[in-house]
Amino acid sequence: MADKIGILVGWEQSFPQAFLERCNKVPGVQAEIATIGGTPERFESPYRVLIDRISHEVKHYRYHLKAAALGGAFVINDPFWWSADDKFFGYSLASQIGVATPRTVMLPQRDYIPSISKDRSLRNLEYPLRWEAIVDYVRFPAILKPADGGGWKDVSVVRSPEELIAAYNASGQNVMTLQEFIDFDDYVRCLCVGQERILPIQYDPKRIGPTGLRGCYVQHEGERWLPKALHDRVIEDAIKINRALGYDMNSVEFAIKDGVPYAIDFTNPAPDMHVEHLGARYFNIAVDWMVDFAVACARGGRRTRDGYAWSRLLRPVEKVRLGAPT
Image 1 (cartoon, rainbow, N blue to C red):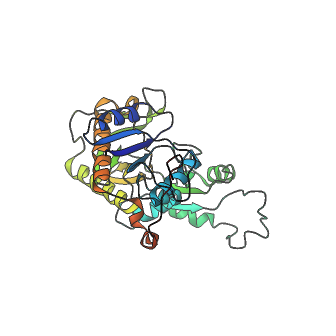
Image 2: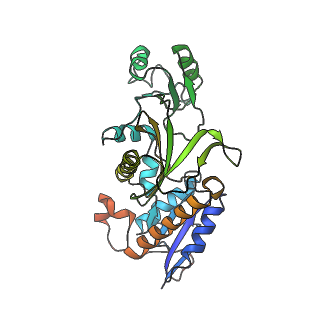
Image 3: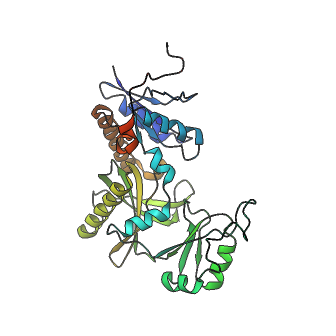
């Protein structure tokens, strides 16, 4: 029987199409767009491996992937951890495993849902905030951005206390972080597969790319375009971050200033893999790596649940698939 690999995708075309075509050329492997409907509580997934590119936007998919992991599938990326992750925790963790990060402070929400009474519900909240101490630590210029956001949404560059307070007052219910602005000399986005394979690509966050979006990859023919010592440090730090966070599909971004790679953004479990953005060379490397990793996981019997304490309490039960004979 073939090892089945399923992929969950949204509107993207180039990566899933290439992944499925190449995966299905591997003997003994069957890869397809996963089909998800009703999920019984004793669920048995038909897929050995599921690759998740969309559950951050479709809540039902995230819940289903947890059920599939409970039933023994290996999910890329772990839906339990992805549900719990946030960017501020990532900065805190990276800074404590020896990766250079900008000085960062998490700020409380400016506004709350209507059921929150600011006089009665927020007794644990320091008020007023010690803005002077916060600014003294981070210093200007700084970046104010959501603690769980991405894609430059709701991001502001602030250069004075007045600009900071104005941007913070407009942040609504977002939990925000104030972060040291790294006026970088160079910028690297690393595509990461399987926690070990790191593809560093020069990236210009300011340039408009070929599809009209902000941010553009810079193409290089050689395998290494950074100085060797800096290249090696970027690879080493990206591996540290992915091992610590447990991500098998991720992108890690470094802003390089005075020879130091500062980890800027590194919790991207459904990274950009569009051929229109990456270019053919980098795209083909990313696809081939994902095929190799997914096939190895399917054949190696990897299971997401094995990393959790509750997996040791599981007892054999009769699994159910809706529509299957009972």
